[in-house]
Image (cartoon, rainbow, N blue to C red):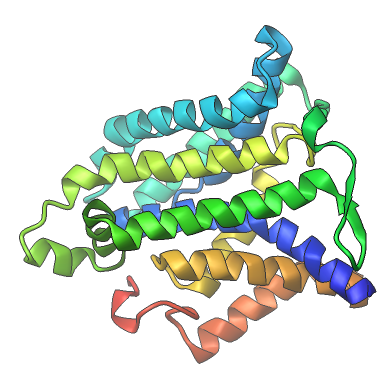
Length: 290
């Protein structure tokens, strides 16, 4: 019973990993940019929900819509003004750029709100617990899991069942081949980058009632998200989501049986995957970038 409970805890944690890795993977697949600022935008999602509630009394439900949209637009501006100027250079330049942006965003939030975590209560409708048969579980965490699965499925349906989605998916997973077919990949870069940032913001809003809302919450998570993306396969949309839930469950089981090493298990898994399948579990060998 305890193992089942821990696996469910892992799925809930994996919900955040999946949403963040999905956005990060789409951005990397299309631009070849390792967006180190992804964790900072996740943090801004949580902080944005807190600010809207604290300053104008905007409910969590509205923040769940408003914050990702605003951050998505900010991400599009960020890509146009900064990332696009360096995309033809060595990828290290954009890595350093996004790393610097992450530090700036963290310091701005720290300057305004300090290092103390800000409280954010759960929405009243999702407060309390729900009986799942085998155990009783907080209603909000169940909502987070269901919501993340629904979002992931919707994104998958858009990417696989619509013409625009197939173009974006092809541009993400096989950009060179897509260009060879005469499709202008460049026109899709900015909206896809904004979409990836919006997913990070969405994960942040979901995290606000569960996690400590502070300037460092994204920095603590981003390294794990990079590992998730590598495990799933760089640029693989499905792989990122699947690996997110897998890593969540692995970490939860690690906490149960080997708590001292639970944080290291993710990177042990990443090392094993890279040794046995360098392209990741769901990646393609020819899609791996040097």
